[in-house]
Amino acid sequence: MSVRFLVPACLLFLLACSSDSVPLPDPEPPAPDFRLRLRWVPDDFGLDWSGARTGLAWTLSNLGAGLPAGSLDLSITALNETDFELDLSLVGFSDEALDALLILLEEFRASEAYGAQGGIDLGRFVMLTLGSSWHYYAITGAAPDIETYQQEHPFETPLSFSVLESCISLGQRGVAFNPAQTIDEIVFICREGEGNLLDGSFVADDYEVIDVMANGQTRYALYDLGGNLKPAGDASRTDAGKPAKCMWCHETVLQPAFCARTSAPNSLTPEQFNEVVLAQTTLMNVYRQELEDEIDFEDSNAHTQGELIYVHFMEPSLARIAREWKLTEEEALGRLDGLETHTNGEYPEFGGGLYHRAEVDQRTPYGVIQVPDSAREPSFYEPKIIWVE
Image 1: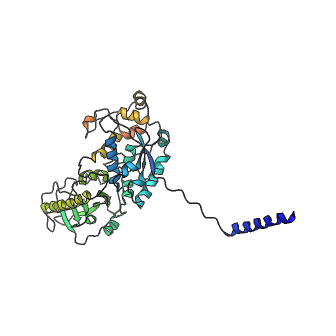
Image 2: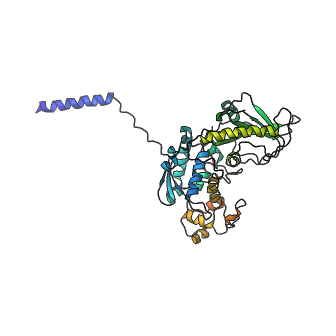
Image 3: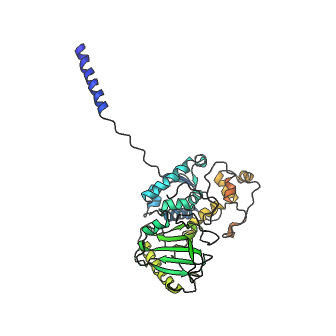
């Protein structure tokens, strides 16, 4: 009996010694979850799912996603007629962009509305990515300051153009840019400030930059007098607004001199500048045509679907609010009691019964993540869940 029990006891002793001397490997961390449930809330003004899908594609593309052909359908899983799941890891974002997006996704998924309503409104998603300057900078990889930007985009033989009459600036602008031969060399740096470029009294106090991302989309950033990123142009000096406003003008023609008429010494004339801009725009368009992706750059109105997503969200009708809250229109109207309605100045055809998002969100049945006051113009509140350091 004693012999039969002795051998197992020795084995147990050896096993115990072995387990003490060989540490167990650390468990693998869970893989990041880049899936997000999105709610497409239909409106009454013709933006159907096909248009919303196009708008989503342009939103992702403007954020830097490569969107290889077929990737959008691969990334979308329909949950029902209006809700779907989007896997952002499948649409061609860089690792750095995904790291930034993951912070946002975790914030979205933790919100009260996400759990109660089964996802985040597609309009809110667009406003908190493309329509939020700090988030746009982080996702698209903007340089943290103008000095770093110039190091990343060196000018070997820069050209200059003095804008003495501007459609955007309330004063004058100085533009420096590359005589680009490749897509990577397309870079414009605009200086805005006070004074006169003709008599040497001009002093720049902020910068606006444009370049082209690998997916063919133009990228924008604004820097202040200290050279640091800022969310929007100074409304007292310029109508440039936020990056989400810039892209609707510079998407098809890079940097046209619409209003410039007067030539300045040591500067290209407006005619010469526009010739260079046209050549670089052609270079960009040829590059875009060679891409095999989800974006039809030749459809100059396609990006409007992305605009309409956030326009309907920021200025919703009663019917849209009721669908968003999953209430009847009578129930929704009761929660909106006392709020004034208005007409959208850009789209008067939407009618006069539109509400302001900031006021609507104060009456929502569930806690939501606050969006900026505007996608295009300087906002009193600009979310900063992620930002460039």
